[in-house]
Image 1 (tube, helix red, strand yellow):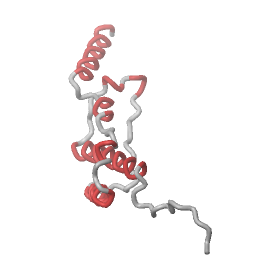
Image 2 (cartoon, one colour):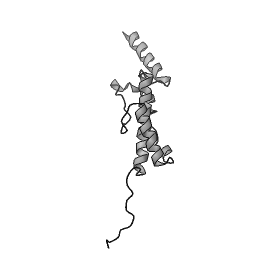
Image 3 (cartoon, one colour):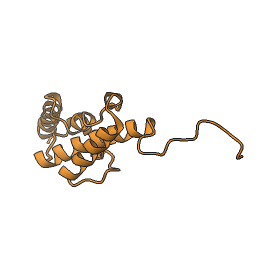
Image 4 (cartoon, helix red, strand yellow):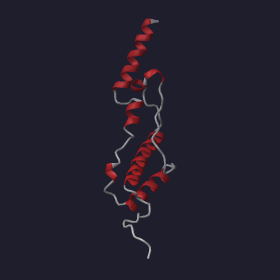
Amino acid sequence: MRWNMMILASCLATAGCVGNSMSERQDANIESSLQYDTVPCDQLLAQRNGLAQQYNLPVTVKPTFSNPAMGFGPFTPDMRSKAKRDSDKASGEIDAMNRSLERRDCGKPDKQKKFALPS
């Protein structure tokens, strides 16, 4: 029984060390929104909507994370299909685009800059 546990532990450690762990790949889906700040608002909205449509995702999607049992996240191999990995990556991109759009107030009407009394 001890040998089985030692073999299992070494297999889990090896699976997590090759850069193929579930938690490592899910963390890579998170993107910085700063890269989208130079893109004009209308182009960024079109890019976000196109990406959401391509992967059949809502435009308000957020990245998701699995909850591996007992802290084995770094040792759990990524068993998701390629389509699921691509969809998760797209959700991270869409979320970053949304954060950039929100920070820059894109898509909202311009606020009145002057306060004036009605005449």
